[in-house]
Length: 67
Image (tube, rainbow, N blue to C red; front, side):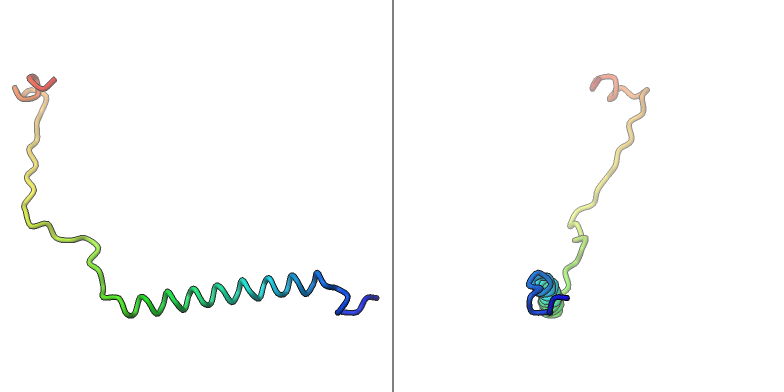
């Protein structure tokens, strides 16, 4: 049976998993810190104007002139 030091590929896999875990934790920490410092952003900004919707049915003269 081989000793643990001669199984270099096992150590390489363990190191890769550890580095990926460390990168994930670091990215989560940076994201968490940046969200705390940034002021909350309004998702839907309010429009300074009113929107009017005009319904046009198929019998109107506007529809026949457009088509």
